[in-house]
Image (cartoon, rainbow, N blue to C red):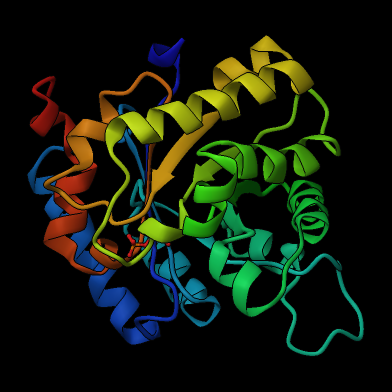
Length: 263
Ligand code: 13P
């Protein structure tokens, strides 16, 4: 049931903010949430900075005992070896990353990442105790040709085939047409696809896994529209891009309960 899943508000910084900027940002975000008496047990907040920021973020989070979680935006399928430019999940685990984003549509599009590679990366994350945030989503063309949930469900299926019922994953439904476009899906559209994704988790990994797996919506989320998504029974949070680069906006999204009226 939805009540047992702790919502997750995740900020994907993409290729923005260097390590110095990341320190200032995380400090301000933590202050903003502290001032608002944010209850992290009621809504987890995570940031996904570039790789080069992670050590700085780790140092700050650990020194100031912040409750913010953080993760990387990608990882290698390999654990070590002659793979120039790649980053091992082991290195991310050593930096206390809790999460890693896998299969973001920008990686699928610009780095030709296939569903199979996304599945392999999901396994690599699991080997190192990182929780994968597996991204799926259809393009505008897919939507026209195949309807709303066929492509995201098929993408997730390839990953689920590799997992067992006790797998700990987060799924992010990000329609490609909604990313960075200012044209978010409607809460009803998001709910429809998130429900289909959950049904597929239930049929492959079982009801227990489906009941505890968090499914996020992503694509032009902002403080003004987060409440509508969070009211949906199968939407357990958001993966936020552009709006996660503004401290006040991201803090307001994280405090969505105040907009929903259940703070
Ligand atoms: P926007 O919030 O900028 O649309 O980006 C969404 C996204 O891609 C998050 O991973």
